[in-house]
Every structure is written in C-alpha cells, then in structure tokens.
Length: 159
Image 1 (cartoon, rainbow, N blue to C red):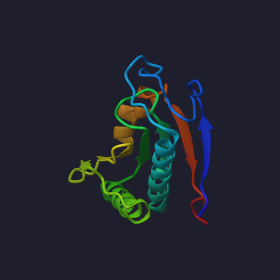
Image 2: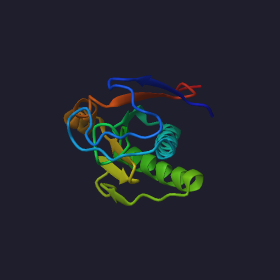
Image 3: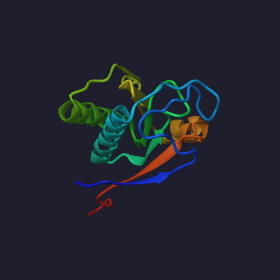
Image 4: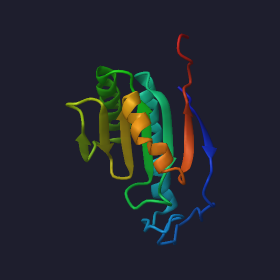
C-alpha cells in the first residue's frame, strides 16, 4: 500500500545533517537530532498514519514539531467517530508499530475513556480523538508553526 504525503512547510529549512540550533522557531528549546534519527522518526510517524488509515481514521495529520518542541519530533493526529473506533485505531497503531518498527509505546493514556487516546513513542506522540475533542483542543492550531504533513489514504472510502 503506498501512501502520499504532502509537505506544507511553514518553517525555515534546516541543515539535513544536524540541527545545531538550541531553540526552535518559537524560541523554545529543541533537541538536536541527526538526519538518521529524523528519518527513523518520520518512518515511525508514517507507519502510525498508515495504521490509523487501516482502521478508517479521518483527518490524519502529521506535524513535524522537532524545530518547535523539545517533546518529540512528530505529532500524529487522527479522528475516530466513536469510542470503539478510537480504541481500534490505537490498537491498530500499537500492533503495526510493534510489527514493523519493533517498538511499543512508552506510555498510553485515555484508553478507558476512549475519547482522546495519547500514545507516547518518545520521538512520535500520537493523538486519536473524537470530533468534539479534536475541535475543542485544536492541536493543529496550537502547533500551527510546525511543518504539516498531510496524509492521503491510498484507497478512497467505498472502493
């Protein structure tokens, strides 16, 4: 299954070998990350997006927050339309990442409630939300200064 990603850069380009800046575009500290680590993080983020798509998640967005946050390199954000679907998306992500990347989340929060599940993989943080939570918290706007990578499903719904 091939995915298509469109990059909407809102930050200045960075040195591909090593980010030497200690502060991001927002003035907050960022972790120095080499290109190999960044590529592994991007591969993990794309695996997360594909797994979410496998469970029919909607509005899948990847944010490259490496230049604007010390927390992670990427945020993956997806919408599920029921608590059951949100949990199924989280389960799909956990299984696919373990199989393809040999990684388990460091921590998972929100599975019991099922309205907003956060999965922490260290360099990638996954947010799976119901529509009201996604609209209310509006993570894309909060991290609007990050590079946005749109995920386009390889198969349109209904095919």
